[in-house]
Image 1 (cartoon, rainbow, N blue to C red):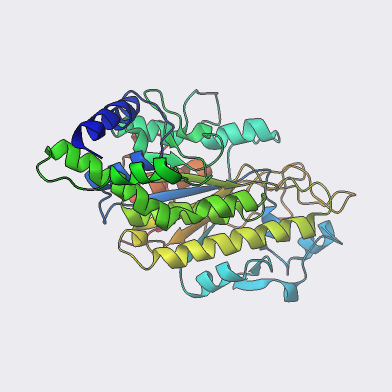
Image 2: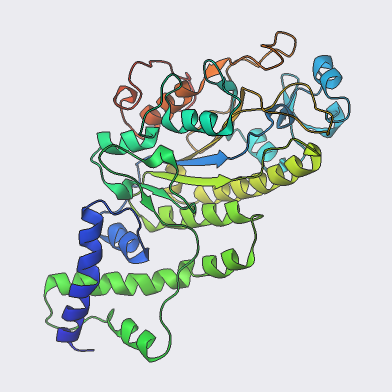
Length: 402
């Protein structure tokens, strides 16, 4: 393909895409991401935060299980796990039997569990509780998410945060900009004669201008990305909800390794509203979570950029202590938050909520969720938490290694 044809093509595609991105468009494609990796690569020493949202309200008591506590057994005669069924963590607690990978990370000093995480004056509504967690504003409604405000405070570059979920979550919306969105669905390039012509756009041409050479390299990188990442499309198309999180994290891992300058990612897994037949449903979901997280963390250990990645796993609320009549649990309050990664200091953080001193049948919060956010803002994203969480000064001390 001659230089004039390429020039015209770039004028109507690459330049337009870059311009749209500059004006705050949040939907990006592979060309945007690979171009960003080439021209503004992620600093190998920069922290990267991966936020995993468990939609529906995960039952924390059957995730990090106080199996030896008689109050737990009495409250859930048919739903409780026996001490010999759980994966022992010490302190009278054990992981759900579906979380063998995380047990291995715990034994290898690579997992932190923050206990009793919630917010003041809890609300049992999915909508309200998730809004609180994503905006980090428990007292009043605000139009911005906590990572959206981080974007605003650090240059308002939409590519510095990326959602691979079907819908951009509120946590990534700022006042000045919103995070980029690249829903997991894979990448396909044109085939046949059009595909051959498109591939030729990536071939270097002697004597062309520097901007044309850079654009050509971007197109060549795009084709290389298809080879590296193209499997995501077939995997995603053939899988249902099950397995979706593994695909999302696999994509995130590939983008981190490629040097895309994104510092915060959002992924999710749903289905945790277990009002009935909880044990089977939740254990299946936790097994999926466990497999996806374990694979991601082990992969991230292999590269310098990957070693800077930290995973934060939360749900909008826990469940009631007492089982309901359908072998499930109803909407509750506080629950555990998992933090994983090479920079994480292993162990328990925060006090385990009492099962005998309850608030109208609910666990009492022992750790404010904003303490967790403030800690990752400071220690992972390198930002003063006060710029994102005004009027909040709490931290989770010692959560990360120096």
